[in-house]
Length: 121
Image: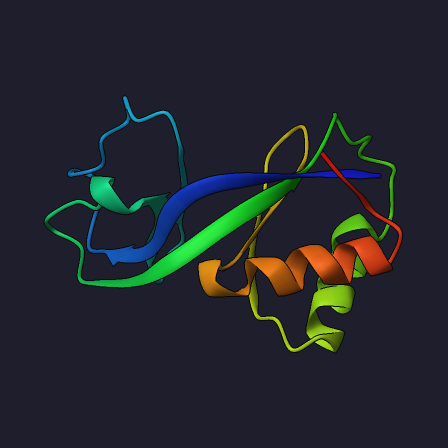
């Protein structure tokens, strides 16, 4: 399985509502539940209405389109990182999984995944 790293600065935000989100941005994840609205976006695109934001994240993705019948892809990735003391924030799309990690841990993330047999694109 191949992993692709992205060299971007991301923030995880808590919002009151979705009104201030720049939906023309090239990258964001949005989750709305009965309890909260969360947004992952480029740090420079944080809405001014954000109640709280956690900065310093980057991410990688599993390359290609993952079949919905595959089991344990995200569980294996996060277990490898957890064993190496690396905290993550995961998000999935229709096609694949994205794993966010603190940018300062990039070398450790890459080394951990390589050691586990993943190819880094």
